[in-house]
Length: 209
Image (cartoon, rainbow, N blue to C red; front, side, top):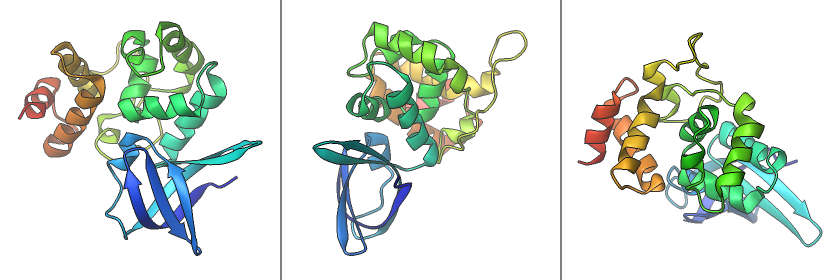
């Protein structure tokens, strides 16, 4: 199993990157959320990888963090009806912290907005993965994902408000008519500017500036 690939970024598109290492150029399939974090072409890059072996092909998938790679594996290995192509599409539309929160909170409506995911598949995502993900902390949303869950619901069944800020802002932007992928990207950019302690209202206002 190839755990990661490290080398020089030769070229990149929103869904594909070519990485040169050891005199070879590797074609790596990536989600849009990884493409956004790639360096300029010609610069060093490291991607955590998952390889799908088939009789007629070997396909390499790459991600910015191990946590994103591991979540991709969960999708393709644990959820019936979700293959690599659909899993990559899911991770292209929503960042990992928001996906984790949507699954942990059972938000099938948001999950069903991802291409290739209908209502039934969204329900399977929640059923199969709810116990395997937690509510990520807001600090994990603005940069590399820490991987460790930010903590689950409190004894009363409610999630601490600070951990819902990014997700609440995402929901608000979608309710205002923004597409999920655009809303997710806008909230992440706002979080970089305002920091992890920003409120949902502040994130929404910043997203529209």
